[in-house]
Length: 194
Image (cartoon, rainbow, N blue to C red; front, side, top):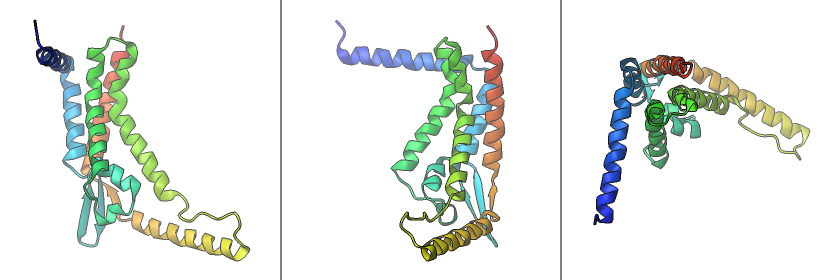
C-alpha cells in the first residue's frame, strides 16, 4: 500500500508533467512572446524618470508599489510583501496562455489575454491615481475653505504636469505591450477555430 507522501509526490509529478506537456503544445511564437513579456516585465524598465542627467527606471513588477504611492516613481520602490504578491500575479499571467492546453473549454483561450489585460488595468489605475483630485472638499467647508482646497488642487495638478514631462515609457513597456498584443492575437485566432 502506498503511503500518503508517495501519493502526493505522484500527484505533483503528474501535475508537473501535464504542465510541461501543455507548455510543449504552445506554438513557438507564443513561447517567444511570453519570453519577451517576461524580459519586459522583470528585466527592463517599464517607466523611466529623467531629471537632468539622472535617470531612474521602474520595472513592471514594481508597478503595485507605484500605484499605491505614485511618488515612488521619483524616489524608488522599496521591497515588500506587496511587490512579492504582484510579482506572483505577473507570473500567473505569464502562465495563463498554457491554460487552454490543460482545459478544453473554449473560454480557456482567454488566458492569452491575461498579460495584456494586466498591463491595461495597471495603466488605467495609475492614470486615475495620478490625475484625480489630491485634496477632497469637506461637506462643511466655508467658501474660503473651498477656495483654498481648489487652489491646492490646481497647484498640485500643475506640479504633476511638470513631473509628467519627465516620465517616459521605457523599453520594457514597449516590449511587453507589443508581445502581449501578439499573444492576444494568437489566442483570438485559436479561439475562433473549432
